[in-house]
Image (cartoon, rainbow over the protein chains, first blue to last red):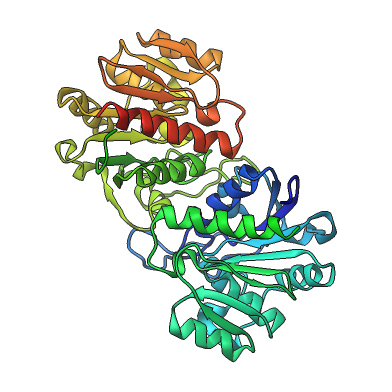
Length: 218
Length: 218
């Protein structure tokens, strides 16, 4: 199994409803370090699509920056995604959360007709070109499908999302807690996490399983 | 070892510099569920002392509410601390982060002359009166010391903080990563986490060790 590998972790804010899902992001960082590898966090330096009050679930009139909020998860140790040089890493990995579908893309609003942020698109395409591994948790496989098209992924069991993914040219595989779908051609690894009705222990398991699967193939 | 125990997790916002430390909070929730117990999150419904841009480390002109921001960590499943009935729980536990020293108290600004938020003080005093267990990570032991006085705690090895804790009438024990100090009389458990220069694996270990120690004694 690979050790001392370098992961670029791409965050989309801080909080499930308008940013990166906090448990998925934290468990991804934990899994990477626990398995003897290291990470650097990145996020795009853009305004969030909106800000959601996580107590009420309602949008607010505030505006917040994706990079600045993601820095909360990264304890300040984060760089703008525009600085990412994929060549310096063995893998890139995307925790989930609505931020992926609202800030890294507009999948939450446009479904299979969405567009993906240029820096994210470039990171994914460069990773494929350089034969680096790509990991995507929860809803993140949807934007990988948009960028790459004919990939084999999972987001768990949510039918509308699976249909949107297939409409973008990808194949969706149904999975349950902790399962990882591997697309060997694209070195792409996906796992459902909170796209299922999951506990925090399921999230830890999913994050550990995907990071282990990625490292096992390095 | 205790199982199916109920923990009230008291959060102080969302983000190390002005709220609850995200990794400590997440790992505390994980440790509780992993060991077969359950949690409910609480936070006081008050404005944060200030908002810190976690990218630059500088305060901003924004204002945010502690309960609303803590809801990001709790995925919306959180209640105002004023609703906490300690009798319904086996334990209360405080993850760290500057929010403990800025929002749950003013320890960050006033040191040993600080005051502690009335709802926090009541939760701690009630827990002692009802012989419930109390857990405190990172900087949180400082506010327990303020409320209870003559307790035996650790915040790791930071001298000025240890001195402030002793000035409040408590005894400080030096510890390193993952160690838990137990004050049997008060059923009080403390561990240093990010008060030390720690990795996210150290935080997971600290959170698991403190939850295990609490459950072992139930």
